[in-house]
Amino acid sequence: MFSPEGPSLRELAVQALSSVERGYDLLAPKFDHTPFRTPDPVLDAVGSALRRTGPFDAGLDLCCGTGVGVGVLARVCRERVTGVDFSAGMLDVARERERTRGPRISWVRADARALPFAPAFDLVVSFGAFGHFLPRELPGLFAQVRSVLRPGGRFAFPLVAPPRPGSLGYWTLLGFDTVMRVRNALWRPAFVMYYRAFRLGDVQRELVEAGFEVELQPLPEFGRRPDGSPRVRLVMARLPGRAPAPTCFSRAGSSADRR
Image (cartoon, rainbow, N blue to C red; front, side, top):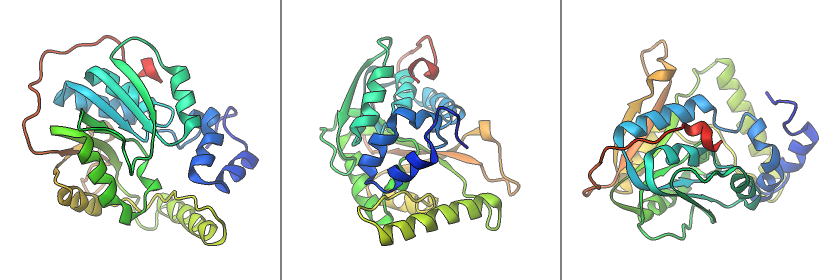
């Protein structure tokens, strides 16, 4: 699962017994060599879908980590892009890999549950971060996203279909979540990282209650499951109101430019 450049088992154990923030500070230098980083095919597929919807003026990568999602935003935003994360270590890595081509980029250390922004963004994206929020925190999290979007703004994130019950993937995720729950029952501070807590039905309901109009877009790059449902969807939540009219937009390069 890990490349030779990734963390050792001992390093992972130390990180897992830390707080979420401290754990990611420790993991940051090797994070991109772990399975926790969003795969390039997912980033590229989301970028392609957003290009069909955009362009946008200002974008925010929520829980940006080492900044790979900022590369997606740089492909579809014309003016500025912001990455926000509460791990200083992850932001340090993001700044080191930043390049100057494209829209202006800024990095902000903050908690996604208390975003320090006015309604200044047309697009918010997030990749692989929702396992760090308990189900009861979703209303507050989505309210924060709404508070930083302009009228007509969009909140987009990919969501992978859950593995079939009884499959290897099902038991793997169930085992991981069980270990984390036992760890959090026995050790403080808690490390919230649950892969089975972010369910599509719950997400849709909470987004609608937060005032969003929700559209699900299949990402065709990943095909469909035997029952015909998409393997990966792009959740596109839109605020009511008039968004800026799109104009012709083209930028050389790809999301790989900022990874």
